[in-house]
Length: 258
Length: 293
Image (cartoon, each protein chain N blue to C red):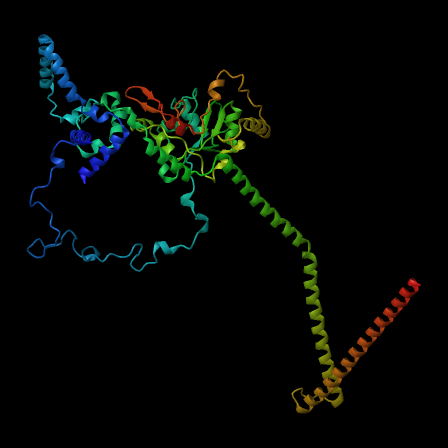
């Protein structure tokens, strides 16, 4: 797995076409070259001085810190040579450059995305942000306008309906009043009937009595008949008046035509 | 082909890590056994403790309170909290606080103020992962605010806008997406990541109306309309608008970010190296096109 990961990372770097892989290990190569050069032109005093200085520095270092920790303390690259698997990752290399700058030996070209990554980013943007700003502004305006319009329409509807409300209220009151008067009339009629029956017998009779009940039924029938007749008469009269008025109208029209 | 492969293999080999404790195989026979021994073969409690549902591995279902009316069922449906976890939050900074920051030299008001400078005071906390999208400037201290500043916030009310403009300042409301906010919270950390400064993305559809509204001083609004609205607001609140054109700090007051820009003076696509004190700009045409769009 580890190897596979490394290989993948390595391949991805290769596609970046960046010479950093060499530059990371350049130190050894450069040293050899330098040594070659040094052998050609020997500067013994300088070399001796240098090695002495190094020796002194080595002896001075009594911290017993590990190399990476010491490097970290002096704000140097803690691992100049890759040691762990993640030292080859793109993220680590970028961070190395970000922290230690040119001294890290990383080519800053790796900071930017390569072509494929760029294409992917562009595609992502096209999916995540499909609309342009003016389009979105127009859309938001349209939506707002729509909601306002719907609210306005609804309010107008309500105002229209509210105009009718007084009439509707009056209707309801009238209906209640009619019902009450009718109920009152019916009650009065019944009472009158009972009174009539009592008058017929001439003395106070118990209303639960059989005789009383029979008489009451009879009287009721009579009353109903009378009411029916009265209704019939009223209707006939009504029709007659209507007919008469129609006749008068037709006559008038005829007169007008002539 | 052959030479190429060998070259590749060699460079790969050169790149492989050195052998160390962390990448060598475990000792032979050092495996962890996958069976739970019983009795004398490592019996006892096996890390499950003594007694109870822990030992018996019969845990109660989540939210169950052993017979009580559970908390998650105790309260009826509360529809006014619907989708509150998805809404944008703007943690407040009051005008009085801002005044204090400036007077105590935590913010330099001779430069444009934005989220970065407020966060750098160390007294303002922003958690973009909890849907906090930046500063909301509130009106506490609007009566005493008297500094000429160029400030960019994420949300401001009318009173706040009036207070700042009355003092001769300029205010803009601007949207930053979460990635941009993450860059702004700790700029040093961000620059040390060694990645190019990203583009600021456009606001979502439900915020576009606010950020394109000249009355809200949105960063996507037409500048002419904004100056019109400045006059309207001055008339509404009854103050005379100080003339910015004749101000000695005209350049500072009129400095504004590009809608794609995150930091003042730095453009998307640039890499900032703090160690070398260098700014690296890409040269590739495609990259330039991507970051400019």
